[in-house]
Length: 260
Image 1 (cartoon, helix red, strand yellow):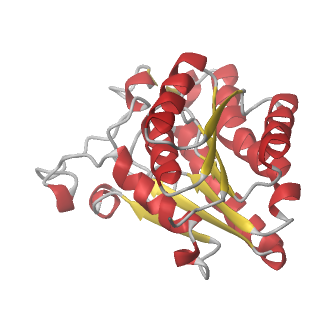
Image 2 (image 1 turned 30 degrees about the horizontal axis):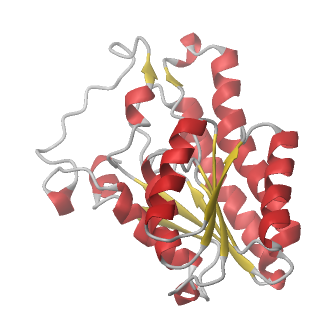
């Protein structure tokens, strides 16, 4: 198995991309720390892993709160003694609204969870990753990296762009410790995150753009699956990508080339 004896932290592991990745990495031999804010969802993920004989523990924590993330990482180290893979995946779409109507509290909430949460997740993991090297994978988006036409998604897109810069900065800083850092940029994926987007008063603010039929060329317009994204994370977590660091990878079926 590709990840035998590896220990992986996966944030946002209760659903969507995080859950699919937790299941796949566990099937490949990794010991999985499934982190999230909803215990019920986490226990469902853990139960599925245990069903096929995998090893996993649930960790309830808010990625935007330093003390909680520091304690979460310590729990993993206390349980297994080391940490090899960090998938900083948790995030929110937040409120999408015209700039003058975007409340500062909503802006701060999106920044704190998506960007500060990524920073805290990696920051507290670094001392353990340094012990033997490892892989960090960050979930960004096509928004803010190739696509800028989703009017109102200013806070969200800003965090996604910043995650790419963050990943490149720390990839260089941590390379001497044999820690690789890469960023994935999914397009339309069948997850719960889009249904939770709070879109407010965007009709007049949005530019009138008409796209051709099928916004995802590779799949005739169908969104990708969480399992497809998990396969990319597995590749970046494994030794198969041992020379790849500081790189963003778009996984969107060509969507961002068409609608960007």
